[in-house]
Length: 484
Image (cartoon, rainbow, N blue to C red):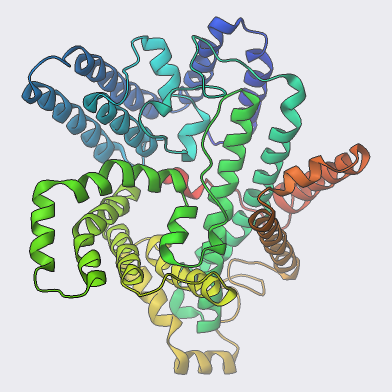
C-alpha cells in the first residue's frame, strides 16, 4: 500500500485515534496489528520481513544466552545471522517494502548484542512491533542498535506512553509540510527530470543542466517530505524517531553535506563499518604500508582513511541497489571526501562554497538518479555538448517537450513552472530560516495568533489540493527512496 493513498490515510487516522483508547500495556499490540494490516496488502513484503525478523530474534536471543561461551561459537552464530540477513536483502531488494532499512537496523542491533553493548528483546511480540513499525518501513529513518525499539521520551515500557491530544497540532503541521514537499514540488519535478533523463540526446545543455539541478531538489523534497510525514505521524502515535536531514543544501563542503543528508544512514555506516575498519589490525597494517613513503602528515592522514572510506562508500552505494551505477556513485562520493580531507584548510562557510558544494553534489547525483551507467554518461555528455546544443537552440529543438505539449520536458506548462518556482522558493526560505534560527517554520507558525495560524494552515492545505492532487499535470509517484 502506498504511503500517500486513501487506504494508508484511513489506516493511520484510525490507528492514531484508537491507540489512545487502548490500555497502555496493549498499545504495542495495536501498533503491531496496524503494521500487519498494512503489510497484508503485499504478501511478499509480509513474508520476507517476518522471515528476516524471526531469524534475527532467534539469533540475538541465542547470542545473549551464549555470552559466557567461547568467542568462536558466538562468532559462528553472528556470521550465520549476517549471512541470513544479507541473502534475504540481495534476493528481495527492490521488491520488499522496507527490506533495506530493516536489514541495516537488525544488523546493527545484532552487532551490539554480540559486543555486549545492547540487549536482545525477549518478548517476541515487542520485537515484532519494533521491527515492523509501519511508518518506518517506507524510507527509514535508520536507527542504530536497539534504538530500533519503539519508545517515547527515551524510556522503554511494556507499552507506549502516548502523548496528550493537545500536542497534535505540531505533528499535523509537519505532515502538511511533508505533503507540500512531495505533492506540489517533488512529483512535478519528477515528470520534468524523468523526461530529460530518458532522452538526454534530445535536450540542449541548458535544459540538461536545469534537469540535473532540479533532480537534486526533487530527491530532497521527496525524501525529506516523506521523513516529515513519518516523523509527524510517529509523534501523533507517541513514538520518538531521529531526524534525518539538517539543511543539506547549506553545506559548505562534501563531508559537511553528508553530515546533513540522510544523517541516520551516515551514522549507521560510520558506527558499524567505517570506524571498525579503521581500527582493524589488518587494515591498519595495510594503511601503514601505504603511508610509509609519504612525508606530509596530511597525506598520511588521507592515505590511512583510504581503505575504510572507499570500502564504506562502496557498500553504501550497493545498499541503494545492486547495480554498477550505484557503486560508481558511492566511489565518487568517497573520492570527493578524500580530496577535501587532503586540503590544508577546511572549506569556509560562505555563499561561494555552499553553491559550489551544491553544484558538484548535483552533478555527482546524476549517476545516482540515472537508471544505469549508460544513461548517466549520456546526461554527462549532453551537459558539455556546447556546439550541438547551440544548433539545437537556434532551431528551437531541445528546449521543449519530448513528444507532447508543454514548455518543458515532461509536459510542464507555464503554470507548472510558476508553481515549481514558488515551491522551491518556499522550501529555500524554510531551510534558510531553520539554518539561521535553529528552528523550523512550524515553530514560527506556532507562535502566531490562533486565527492567523489556522488561516495559514487552511491556505497551505488548499494549496496542496489545488496544485498537488488536482493540479494540472499532476502524476502521483512513489517515494524515491521507497525503492531501496
